[in-house]
Length: 167
Image 1 (cartoon, helix red, strand yellow):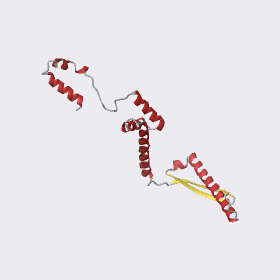
Image 2 (cartoon, one colour):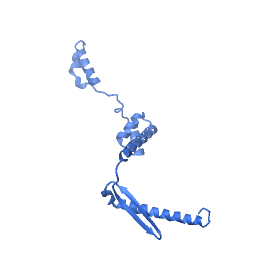
Image 3 (cartoon, one colour):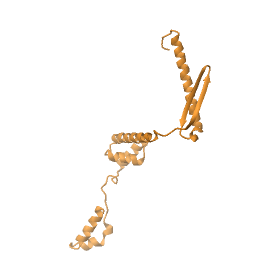
Image 4 (spheres, rainbow, N blue to C red):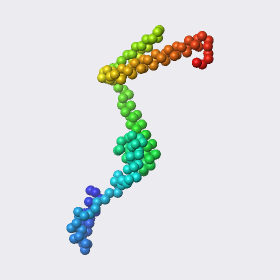
């Protein structure tokens, strides 16, 4: 039972012994309800803080509001609290994905001269492996690996010739 309801019942019970009793009993609709919780005390400055925090962090309205309430309206503390919460949630999501099997994927094969690179990039579903962006990723990984191997081979050949200067 709410505090206001208890107060109304008390006043109605008290009205029988009070000279103003009939007045209290006649107009319960005119009584104003009030709430003193922090969620209702919204001023222009708190709305501005909320919008500023949302713009700065990009988090949802609910999370920003909770952060400001938790940190007492301090913008820097609220931002720090939001980042900590996001890390906690992110880590828990990553832990959920940890044991999942990646049964699908693509193999990329690239040859240039006497250097050949074979890369395997895995994913969870065949829908992902058929995606153009995923196929481009495999090509880029293969090309990057080939270039790295050629660069490494050039450096090793330079060192094997006795030239120990850094290139």
